[in-house]
Image (tube, rainbow, N blue to C red; front, side, top):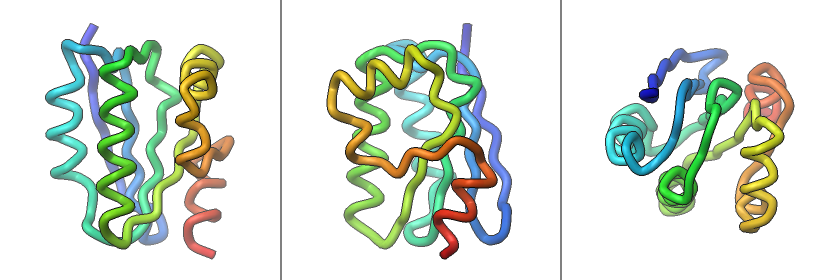
Length: 113
């Protein structure tokens, strides 16, 4: 299974949905595509509701995106964490890096206040 990225702008916030598996096979392309989609500043909601699996390579992509955000003026929120992805991120301490919200709408609202 591959990974598909879709993006849109909602109330000035870039929303990127990741659908599929984020693993060692898809991570390099996802990382490259995310870098191209993410602004240098502003707000981004990553919608992971369609991410059915995340390996350590996927966590690395999220870490690199987090570092990218921290090096500039980019605010980032995650939404749609499946129980498996949430458990992996919790066990590795990754949840503490991100604003985690329940929906895209909540993410857009949290980042625009």
